Image (spheres, rainbow, N blue to C red):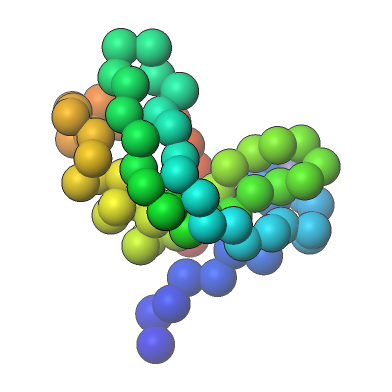
Length: 77
Ligand SMILES: [Zn+2]
């Protein structure tokens, strides 16, 4: 089992992360795209969005230049 568990916000240390499922819009200025029904974690305390492996894969499918543009978003390891 290699299911990634994100239980703590890397930004503020909050443990109140919520798993959400909704359309996620890229906030990159040059790359506007939306990933429909993306499941990811949201930190209610600081607003950080966290993506596990599955979510990253989904984003990758929609992002025009995911590979060369190294994501600044964190994935908890
Ligand atoms: Zn946080």
